[in-house]
Length: 258
Ligand SMILES: [Zn+2]
Image 1 (cartoon, helix red, strand yellow):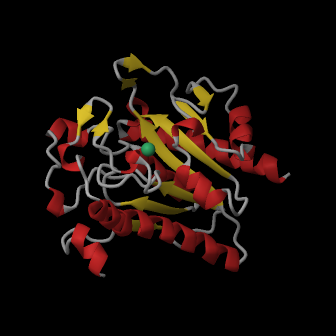
Image 2 (tube, rainbow, N blue to C red):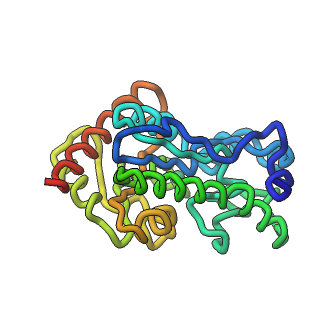
Image 3 (cartoon, rainbow, N blue to C red):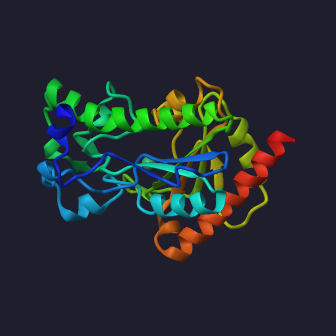
């Protein structure tokens, strides 16, 4: 494909990865910020190694948790193979945050003064195939009579602009809060995590784009889960979080379907 080759080279591989495509569970997991990898031709975007390994490039721990949940829920998992610094797949192309020139306290030199042509190339190479693939998965499931519950998995930094964030797990939703309501209810007596609704940010911050375009139009149950990344920094933490969230989802979906 001509357009794709201008952003992604032969060494880079595909923009989208799908694991457990034949998963029999009703949940489809999505991880937009799974990877810190940059396409080869972009070098380091002018960033330090510190910035490139930080939360501005990806959601540390999110893919690891999503993979565990994919196993326990027998869920198909779709994730973006490249850093959100090149294209943030949880943002529409017209959003400045899709290809940010500043993220938190970091300037991103390689994203400054992007031409319209470059923005279109990145959109075509990363955003379109990612959301196209999710759309195809959902359509194929519908065709074979398999319902879809869309769950996106993210992580966030414990300190943002110098301020500590006390919330540990955020249950986020847009206009359809059915699943989020049920999960918050199920989590209300846990002492494992501090769980809150639409924290550390919410739909007003433009973070529910994937839910908005992939779940809301078809009326699919959906939720976005944000985990504070210090709680999933190692395998033990990832296992505990994945088990907790798997349990919450199972219980909540059973309650909704009763
Ligand atoms: Zn994220």
